[in-house]
Length: 71
Image 1 (tube, helix red, strand yellow):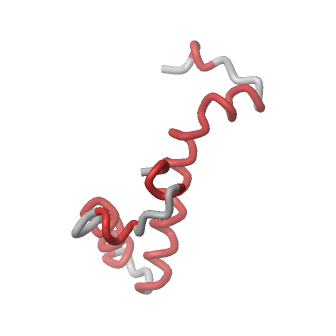
Image 2 (cartoon, rainbow, N blue to C red; image 1 turned 90 degrees about the vertical axis):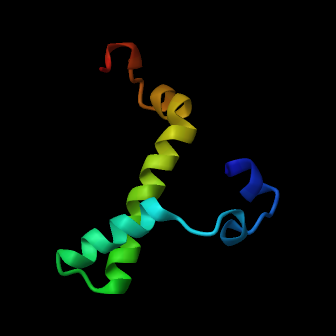
């Protein structure tokens, strides 16, 4: 995904839908969040997760984390 985005691919054209994101948005909305608020919250959570997956080695080194002790 990252490579395709860096190459300029349109994320909307990569797949017909984003079911995991859509489910999370609906869950936030079910808890009373406004549609725009739910979308923003989900985007932030997904960004955090994807950022960690992509930058884990850098983040571990920068924060002097010993990941060998993590579960």
